[in-house]
Image (cartoon, rainbow, N blue to C red; front, side):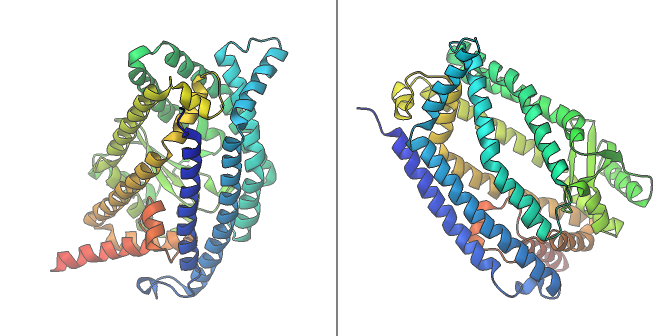
Length: 425
């Protein structure tokens, strides 16, 4: 008797939708609170709070609609066996243009091309509304419709260039992997991850944004001095024109070994008029490097990926599993899709655990910046970034514990104050 794999997947998908909607409702109630949390009274202006509240509520309403449509489409596609129908139709398309549908790589690329078209069509209305209605209404969107379309076309072209060789390699590895399939797949994805981490900031990111060296001046001197004091191998310091698309701000670093680079959003420089506030943000980021958070995160991701591939090798030959989803044969890409659906419970649990670790890392990086003497500047920068980005001021504890990879502002400020109090004691 075949096990009801599909029914189990559908049940858990619906259960998780109900559970996460409950958390969303709790967060929505928190967002509707008319007053700031006590620790932020006198810290955040009333005008910024009202703007933040309106922005967060708009995003919350939009999120309810988007999630409802998503779960409806996903469950419908699985329940009515749309995937096997689409796999069959993609094979017919391949045959109609004179190619062989027996060639799994060609068949898979046709299937994925159709899936990409479907994804673009279904996602486009939500993306347009989010960008040109919600973000524009609250003063964040800076891009024109032409820039939006150009970015979308660039993304599609990149997928068409990078996707086929990657997909072909994965199919080939699965076909010849044998008992060492998990190791081969992990090894390939490990090399691919390193390659993408290398070429993305150098080749891909500049296709979408302009990166220019940070001009000589006080800010550059202070960042270089901080990096040198920590023996951070800073090679290049860039400013990215994030303001061409949004007024949201950020900063990040990347690179391997002795070739590190730091990138500041131009919006961050505009919003933090005090250079020391910007430097405090960089001190926080350098804390992640000094405390090896990036290394730990990368190792954790690689371990989880290896375990997933190991699980995939155990179920890929299960005819009952494929049959439950409506497939008579066992294509590699379909096996990966089905496997991702079957491990949804584990994925949610792992995501929650990774968020716990990420929040702990954020507290440690804040403490690192504070120990360098940047506590007042970091507090000021966190508050200013919270205000300028109109981030949610009131958060539900259950919602933030489940979803947030960064602690809420109240918790970060309280942690900095607590560490100050302990020092005084």
